Amino acid sequence: MLFGFLSTNQKDALQHEYHVRLIIVCIGALTILFVSGVVLLIPTLKLLNSLEHIAVRSSEVEDISLGISERETTEETLNHFSVLMNIYKQQEQMHPSTTIVRLIEQMPSTIQLSRISFSDDESKVTRFSVVGKANTRDALITYTDALRATGLFSEVTLPIENLAKEKALPFTLVLVPKTLHEINE
Image 1 (cartoon, helix red, strand yellow):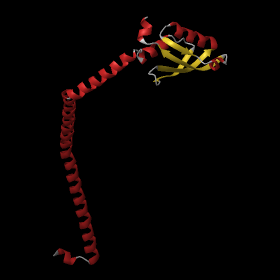
Image 2 (cartoon, one colour; image 1 turned 60 degrees about the horizontal axis):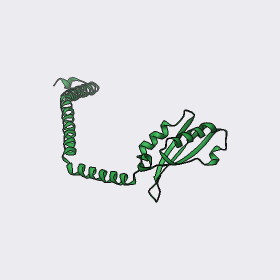
Image 3 (cartoon, one colour; image 1 turned 90 degrees about the vertical axis):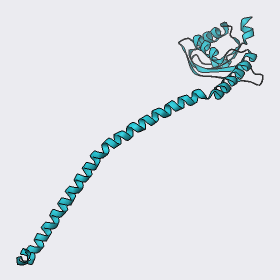
Image 4 (cartoon, helix red, strand yellow; image 1 turned 180 degrees about the vertical axis):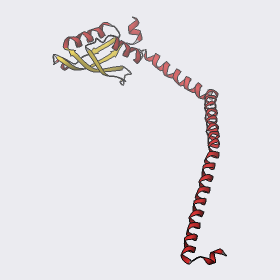
């Protein structure tokens, strides 16, 4: 109607202005829709997080109850441990942890241990290998003598090549603990 009186340039400019305003209104509507969607999703997200937390806690309770109800597995484990203890008692040897404690108790401050290992040979005799460094030759000899004096070892072997240097001596001791029967005699 009124557009008929406008020139084509004015019609094109008016149409362009109309499209720009339409795009601005659409973008504003989409922005409002997006913000309201995010605002409405936040409580849902919090609810899901709390439900997940509840689910995790209930699964922890189920795990604990499963561990308690598996008495057969616990009994099997205890029976296996009992068998191992009986085998160990038959060997009548000191427990390795007791031996390691004795090694450390006798160690002077001038000795640094870097490794303690133990193994059983074919005759079921446990042998300990103690590797370390002594500040002086006298400190190493004193440590070896202190281990022999405990009466807990049937054999304390210090290879002679370990005494070749005067200071900062790397060493390897081989120890065989006495059986409990030998210690009690």
